[in-house]
Length: 497
Image (cartoon, rainbow, N blue to C red; front, side, top):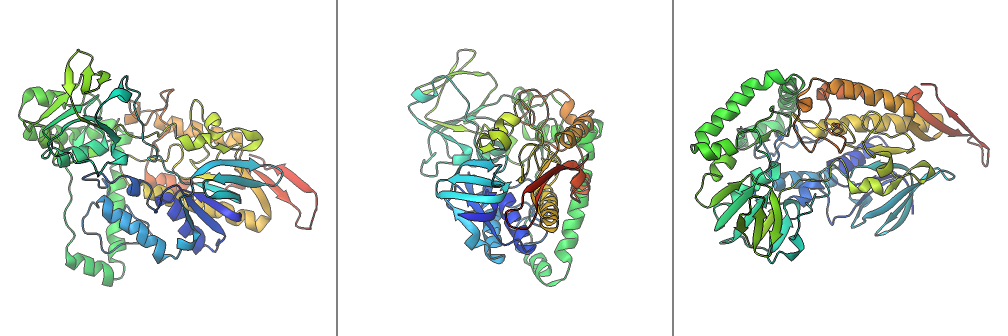
């Protein structure tokens, strides 16, 4: 089946792309997703306590405000409902191809088309937008003996709601954003909770509150009210980025976090385990009011020794101690710098994106890649944020994609890709901007790839990223055109850089 634009993924990125195309008059597109519903990360992550750590009014599309948010920081069910509501609000449901897992996407240089092989059939497309998202594929640690474990094992992103945790001995591996949310929820129900911590997290108070009906009514009826709130949140949250670019600024926030830790964890031995020894922001800063208190309960142990192996009835740490468990929950994050989908995308000459991104990811303006014509990658390299909403970054990328598509339509362009030189210059600028930031202070985090390079986070403000993506630059691209007369020979040229 032929379509003009194929979109892979039906989360914030994929749905945002579909709606942006629809609103701009590009109506020949399809959205492919392996799930049975839209939502992406917010469909898959349904663990107890799952919620967003970015204010609701910012963690939503600028073109689709939601006056019905019930809390200043939304829960997973509410965000999922919002995304499903956007599908119907903008009439894009007929464009969805759910339960269509993409097995391969390959560029055909002769036909100037992407060939997609999916679980629901084969498709061709002129343009491919990859919006699979960086938090799509759970990272499962290779622990010796895990296949011999006699109990139940699952990742937090694949929560087993049919597995009752009441009265069980539960081992939680990992102390990232997911664990910080679900641990306080399950702790009261389990007999024993053993938390295996590799490194403690910086945690800030969760300054959330319910949004009153009066406020909701104002958002519905007063023109511009919700946009004004969003604009204020945008300015405040983007300003927080100063502390990531200049680590010394974060000292005040660090003191606030440590003061909260002292108040919530009176036991000095446990408090020492939970005290970070790296600069705030080097790893993801988490927000919670109940995580630290939950670890002080009598049925909780925090273990900092490394896991040596999994036994049939528990876990054995490097010091030889056996920790009994009948359930293991993996809060071990996702494949961010090595997403499996990149191995399925093949550009010019059949080279896979996985090979192009080995050992390190590179992309022009975080969105397009040399050697991969007509491919746009949402939330690609160095587009993540530690201080505000990634939806802002997605929308900036979508403006760039639309600008490229309009240029292609106006100039009769068949294919476009960034030149290797333009991509190299962009990457060098990003790496230079990373110097002196908190991410270069020496900690190990999922922001870093196998080479130790930060390929995940944008080293700047959301505003600066949006400014850099405000227009399409033909001179930075290899442009392939063809005469419009039938069967005319192609002419190919590369614009000067």
